[in-house]
Image (cartoon, rainbow over the protein chains, first blue to last red):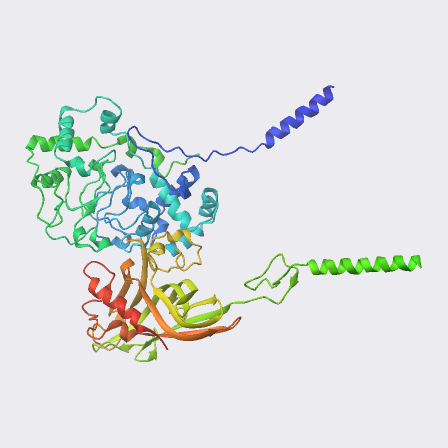
Length: 337
Length: 273
């Protein structure tokens, strides 16, 4: 009898030792209070392995011609995933013609680039790699280079069940970028979380933001209407904005409304980085802008007093999410397990 | 007698069964390479039919001479030019007969650096009097995701070879590049100014139609040759492109007039040899 018990026990032990541990690859995306669910393409639902792969690629300088520039070179976490150059230098110090946009809450964007030339986050990935003023790497060459790295091949198979290719490259980086969700700023705590954290100046600034029509374009939970506007920055635009894509004169000087989240960290401002500080931005908007046939009728002189301008800037700074910019999960040294 | 009757019955039954079996075999085409291969047929009935092969070639020429990327050519405005890239897309190639069309090719990319063959494809045999295709990529595929195609597809990220515009999702329909003798030393080298004419965008899709008598025969290859007259590309009846003033056209705003002229010129320059 005892002998039988030992045999059974041995089998049980052996069986339990052979049991493979099933890795949980599911990824739960943070959805802050007041935020809607993010719309994610069916062929690129988030998983840990996809986000890990995308993050690794995002920080990998080998995607650029001379291995000196990565996505993260211009999209720095401490600066709200933007940088502080007027125009960011690419390979060989090449300069493009637009200021680096923030990637804060980029997964909620509905159209990409300031002129809206690209319809999906996945397709957006291709431009900086191929752009001569950024990474200057023909995408097929970039793929060949990365596909030759065994670690990437293995990660591609784990994440997408296929060898490393253009599909994997575009999907993985987009997957990582969708995790860059920022929703715990002082504003969120005050408005969405019901905490009483605003100072009087910040509260005044918020009221001005609503009353003066700023929120007409910088609207909703992400402070953007995802639309294009000419704000009268110039009488004559050297960068014609949305018209570059549509070829319509009526789109000249129109640029996509940027989110204001983490705006304190992303100076300088405007499509060309021509305004150095939030104070300069408020001063400009206070004038009502230059004359232009396409200028939005929403842009009018604000007639703000000195203290009101300070209040408005104070409010804008409440959109800084320090948890977001300090979140180690967004950094290269963190791996989702 | 009884034994003989039994034998007769036995063999008769076998013959009948064999005949029945044979006559019940489903008939059809047993050649798996044929258009009408019938996978559950057991008896070939001689009905197999096969496609014809249509090869379309394009021969870029300047002053009636085949273009070589190593040679220079005298431009209409009196300076030398040299080509380095001649590429374009065609979509929805069809052969027609009296207004009825048959598909010949879905999408092809011509790259003169590799070959003078635009496409080689299987086509339903028959007599045709027209060959037509769009120069460029139709609006649906023009805005599709290139990373979703197999890597050998002409529209894929890997095979489009720089024909995809990443800043404004879509393809360059036509790319003509090279240099012109901008310093007037009668030599073209790296000191001279490059020219780049990148044509595209949905409104600039053009349809090229040629009258051509073709009798496409089963399992036979028919070659149709076009000339791409590059002089014509740069000029029409009233205007000649000023390469010095307009060395690059990327269909940006302000370039609509020249872009449209070059688009129409390109279509007109592609004619049957």
